[in-house]
Image 1: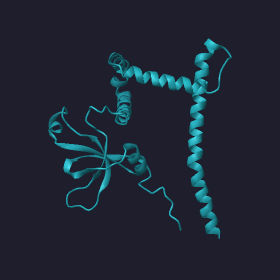
Image 2: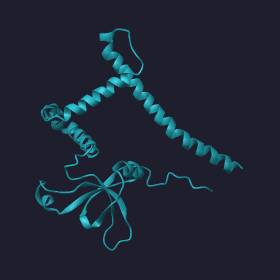
Image 3: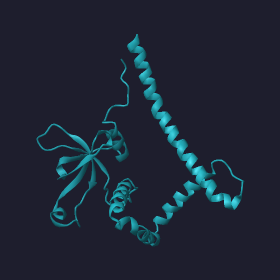
Image 4: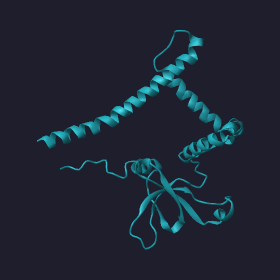
Length: 200
C-alpha cells in the first residue's frame, strides 16, 4: 500500500513539474516583456497602457528584425555590427558558437542543399547503431586534408545534453531518418526514454 501511494505521488509530481516550470518560464517572459515595453513607451503615451502590449511590441520588433536581416543591404550592415563580437578573443568563441548553433536550426531555403538531417549511424559489420545529426554535407573550402574529405560530419548528442561527439564518416555509414532535428534533439535530451507510460 505504501509503495502504491509513493508511486501515485511520484507520478503526480512528474506530471505537475513540467507544466509548472513551463508556465513559470512563460510568466517570467511575459513579466519581462511587459516591464520592458512600459519603460520604452511610457515617455510617449504617459500612464496609458494596455495589458499584453509588451508581448505585441516584442513580437513586432523580432518580426521586423527578421525582415531586415533578410535584406542583403542590412545583412552587410549587420556584419559591421557583429565586428566586436567576432574579433574579441573570449567573446568571439561564445558568440560564434551560439550563432552557429542558432543558424543550424534556422529555416533553410528550398533552393539550397539540405544540411540539416537526422540519420542512423552504423559502421559496416556492426549491429549497434546510434542516431545522430548531420551537421556538414561537404568539406569543400576547409583547409588542408579536411577539404579533401568525401565524408559527412555527424554530431552525436549525449543524453541530457551534457555534451556530444562529432564524427567524420563515409556517407554509406548513415541512413536518413524521417524525423525533424527538433524531435531528435528532444529525444536525445531524455536519452530516448519513451514518454508513453506502460500500463502495469
